[in-house]
Length: 62
Image 1 (cartoon, rainbow, N blue to C red):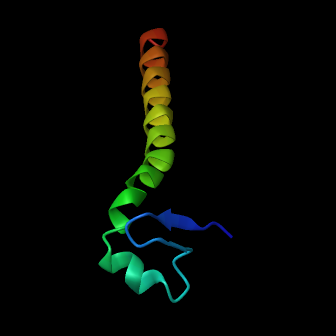
Image 2: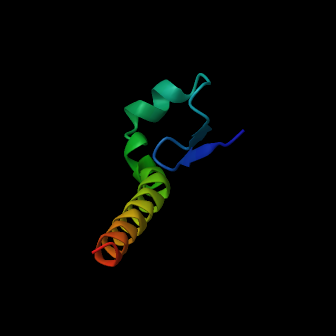
């Protein structure tokens, strides 16, 4: 299981244990924002590839 470290709370949590309350009180949840980038960046890249493919298909079908 993955454990996320918070230096403000001096604790590690996986979100399912008893340390989650101390984690949230210490504003550690704001440091997890980079996790969204791991999902957002590939999604944007796939969207751009689909858009470029659509433009190429549209130009070739004329």
